[in-house]
Length: 325
Ligand code: ATP
Image (tube, rainbow, N blue to C red; front, side, top):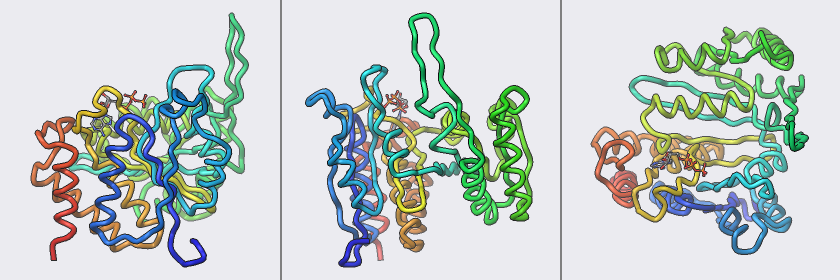
């Protein structure tokens, strides 16, 4: 918090639909009566195209001066010269836990994804004939993500540890470490191979409460869970560390629909609710979630959910609901 006692939030619109959905999230936070200082940070692929630099060291410093980050979406192009900003931010701020709730009639699940290791270690050797990526799993990394998952599972019931330890030695360390933490904390846990988890998420999603898994598996299973919920545009995430956090919808910058005014803003709005929760503003977080649910129940939906509303229609409806006496 700043010296004045207000939360200081780095606001990063980013690319594609990022600025559109972030505008919605800020409007809804305002309607909910949230008070915080905003620091606009313009980083991303657009800036890289304009200036050859996606994020300067000064931007990173500005972000580090803030308590947390609220982000729209950033494009990561398949260009070897482009370094992913999101990966850099997660590493620099040590945002080790990626928490992704999925809620619908079919599913009520939280995926807790390790965010700094695994196949996203950044340790790569690339040759003309062969390319290698080092998959890193540490006891410390596994322990702290397991602790976070157990904290969440204590409120939600069962913890499922998802891995591929029959093939990957590195996942044996992950599995054993998570099991030890769950046992020490008295959390009921089960283990499941990632391929089996992928199948069960589609055919029997109700069997899961909390999943803890490594970086790449968590990335893929999250998009699958979003499909089960109905749209990527509905889902939110919090990337949390010991001293900072970054909140963003789980979708990317969706260049195919950018500028059309039809992006679903609910994932970004729910990310804002997660930020409120992180700030200890539980009542505001609950009210925002209720307003989102009300919009869905009343078919106030963008085209990705089969509706005919614009981003603005959905945003206004959620904000109006919050402003009702
Ligand atoms: P990026 O390169 O930034 O990852 P992408 O298009 O590859 O972008 P996503 O942005 O996650 O990946 O989009 C995947 C698909 O889901 C696209 O067809 C996109 O239009 C759709 N989509 C993603 N987010 C939303 C949203 N908020 N509202 C509606 N559709 C969305």
